[in-house]
Length: 270
Image 1: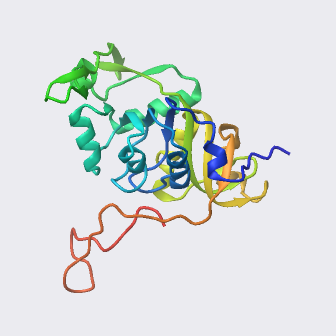
Image 2: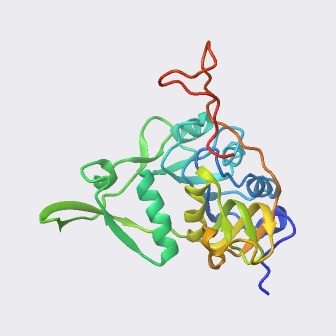
């Protein structure tokens, strides 16, 4: 039997070296592989190039690696919840490859599927295609590194010529992933918003490391319920229930029933 289980998060990430590239799952604060991130922080790995939808917040998720100065470059689609991220980027300490969210998802999926590149309409006519987006500042307000121009081609779509920009796929040395349930073969089940980027990150990593809340025996997960097959997974660690944080808690003032456009306390993953 193929048993991909590892005894601890620390053991599972122990061979991630300085300078490694990582694809890290999570959507906002949902589905962050926090036990693996904390283990990586504890072992001191640095100079990391990280691909993730976002960089967590100042004290949670990837934000704890960022705050410790362990991340050299982020490839992300959303970076607006982390003040330390802003400080490091504007001061020239951090490189950022800002990528449209759907494009980032497809770049990860393509990398995991053996597709080298693809054309998309997203970003045509903007600096995403034309280049010039700041990737690294020089610390004095100037741009030290800017994004390059990308190949743009015209294709006929429904009989109409349309421009598309070439986007290259992403693969990384390792992937860090959170799943709700997994078996010893690495078959995974995700919950709610945690499913948004975790399967894609798992596909893109040449070595995929997964933390699961519940580890079960092979055969206990209905094959129709598997969100990601074990062929993409190399190591799996059971970490039990993890804290589910909320980025912004909004409550309605006054009566108990919510009114139009007003939210009650909520989280994206339960």
